[in-house]
Image (cartoon, rainbow, N blue to C red):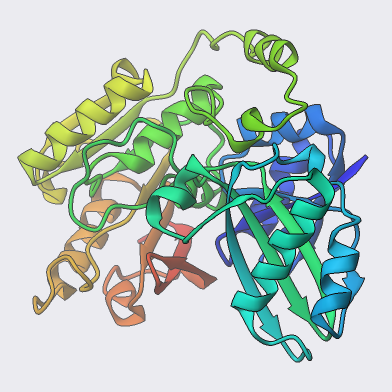
Length: 374
């Protein structure tokens, strides 16, 4: 069994832990993510199925102490690098140092690279942390030095897990796929009842909802860093893909709308690439025109809140209008609204739980949750 760490968006740790529990692991929440133990095939499965995580990191051995660069190189040279790297292969380092005698991140990376050469007989091709390299063209190695303890991890995912592969067209201020999935989980949506998103933008929330309801693993159409590891079990991976359960027969009603015709076009194209176009009713309309189905369901949405979209505009009327429409047409429905502004959320006009804080593109936001009432 090996130790793994599922990196999450702050605030979503509990939902990533629930996903891991459903996959058969025993997760432990820690700052920044969730720890779990698994064999290599379990790690494949986590990457394939996790919807709310950003990356899955593999611990390269256990942490060790180092107070000099010579000690760092000697002890790092004993780590099982042959599990993760081919001799001379490309690597990217991400190093952080806190409260330790070793504080020069570049020098730490140099000694780790030398340790890899000592172990594998050939130095790695060290690349700078460009966007392309962090998206899977080189093996990312994460090194943390805290209180003289060194922890080295290898990224198993490659490209961040939110990059499912379907979202090639994006509207303004797009919501990352893993955050959209986490919002749906936090809303309590049961994957069977109707779901409405009246501010769908390029469609991330309804598409993630359709993927969840249809049981399509988020990683089914992409590559992962572990596929380039020396011991990658290609046949077992193929078997895992073929064992994905069949689609359920009855699918929920999912309605998605936006007043921006260009955004709706993007959303339809993204849904087509995701294989769920036929499951979502896309409409170009304002929030006041929505017509939800008669049975009770969920409204889960990410309306404009003043950063990047509608900057300088007074959005209080929009939120008040949302509240009026919901009271008129969605009595008893569950509601989850992502926003950074408590004043705007107050304009909706009924009690909402705003304790869940998240990060959306570096902006601190809240997921306001409640039930539509008079």
